[in-house]
Length: 507
Ligand SMILES: [Cu+2]
Image (cartoon, rainbow, N blue to C red; front, side, top):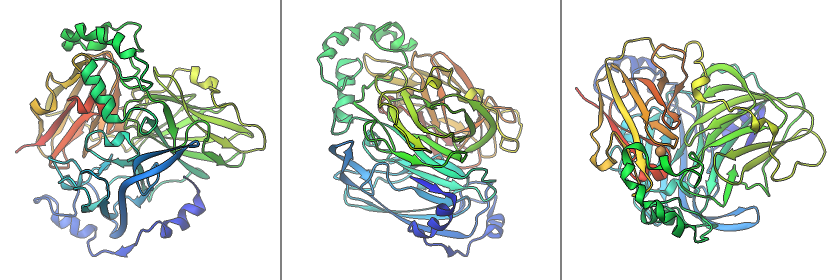
């Protein structure tokens, strides 16, 4: 999944994209601004390039080779991760989607502030695509950045159904020689219990699911008595039974670009080259600390939006988040390691700029001993902040839950009982996310990016923010994309156990 810049430029024509002169241009967009939503307009702010790109996408059962173990799973384009979709900000995208899975599915374009009816949330924005069925997506991609797509149906994302969606910035200075898309994933399908078995076990036993089936659950069942502390987060009193932040599911494997540690992807490069890494955490239940051995990283983007360059030895990335960083490569063989927080195992790939032996499969760069960079320490790049404005409303999102019963809530309610958050078009709304549990929750807003800390401030723009245990983060969001939008935890097990709500535009 690595391309030189030259390959990238020439490769665009070969991706299956058909570039045609569409008749809808920026001037027409301007004329139609301010009226009711029209089919091609996504939000109030973005011009279109007039280019049309056609893609086809198939979701189907397939077999993948995980370091010598062949497993059956569900994937896009018969590969894990699925095929990279790539376009330029302002392009119109058509995706002819064919569901060859034996179940209904959906495709959500994570991080893209596109028109509401293309957002891919069954029952809220977009009809599900039935088994054997087709759906034609058609939308304009407004903002550049490192994004991705996955189903918004049950636990399907915890199979192999995920892929990068890269939106290039025509103004990108391109101060790098190479690009490397790095997708992190926690893997159980075919080598451990299925995602559905894991959730069933969490719900039945009220404790963490363990993939090795070693009978631990009997002992863990004793935590059932703690179910009464729902308001405080059931994890609070579990001292010692598992790391507070270790997720709810144990995974047999952690993958980088679909490859386990015994068969890592190798990026072949030259010493002195400047590498841009686009990192996506497609995991269902795993947060990572990430480092490249012997290198210092310069973080340049969070969730696709530019930040003031920040030097760090390691980065913490939650589910659904993306970070871009650059690094000047040294002479040798270096492991890129993603160490799952609170879990056993690791994901790795290699960067090779010279001959020589690769480090051992379990080698951990000393950079992982450093304090990882988190989003709250990033500062927005000039020009990327939301306009400074006092929020017209403040709404709280109280995050809590319990392991027994296995229930996760926003404002005390599971999704089926939730009262939607509301906003009026044109407003800037403030949302105060308070985590009253002892687990981190990566909170994701559909259809928008928010500014961490407040509009016009110094915090980064993001669409997914990892909220640590007992932390409170204010975020501001500009209401420029009307519709009914999902707001949820991107721990897919938490989402399934209720940790979702909606943001509805009201008049
Ligand atoms: Cu959560």
